[in-house]
Image 1 (spheres, rainbow, N blue to C red):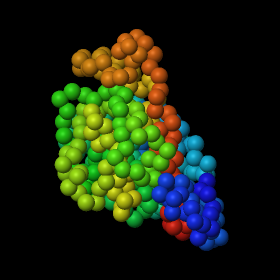
Image 2: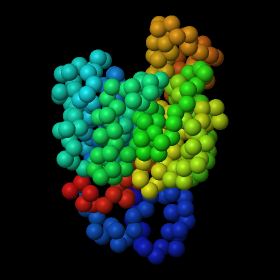
Image 3: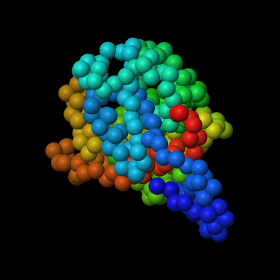
Image 4: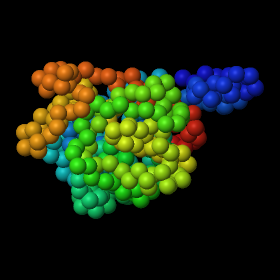
Length: 301
């Protein structure tokens, strides 16, 4: 929870500069506790694995969070049973009357298609537009981030000569509450065939690149005014996720490279270790905390 301090505490400026979570005394007096409402739009085929990864990522926050899972009504899932979807998921039509403190949009295995060729693209655009007024802050992951940046900021994606796959070193470019507590350099799983037009990102004054990878490009991009966060890589991944993707690509005859810096001694028979767990927890908890501290109490009322 944020630290409650007197409004005029001398150390306030220092604490704020260091991104220590604070709540000022006059704000605490009128604060009441209610569960945060978080919507997860799950675009991944194996929805159970992805929902588990994301619930783990946000579940370490000390705040009370209520999660609503959503799937696309215009797409028939082949890898998740209809029974699971009926029991645990809702469609946009069913929840569009509600407001949410935060929304997470996952990646999807469609990155090599043009956006207009994605079957559910019109429905996704409808959700993105609805979110302008019904979601206080949004966090987009991998293809979801590319789709969001294309829709909101017209940032194009670019094809890679070879798939980026593995554990890549990243670094913080500028400090933000989003990266409070993260090391100056840290490992992040990467798995994608595309990137972004980074010159266009740099030219867009609405956007800030918070963290990047010398090898994989921009990682965390923020639109502060719109309260949108675009995360290009996969801190939510399990230790064996990239191994499973590598084996899938091998079986499909795609001639994948051995994932970078992933298997011990570059041996695909060795068991990879997770080296990004703490940074995953920090990033998602920091996002949850930033939403909690800034969303008007009446937003979801």
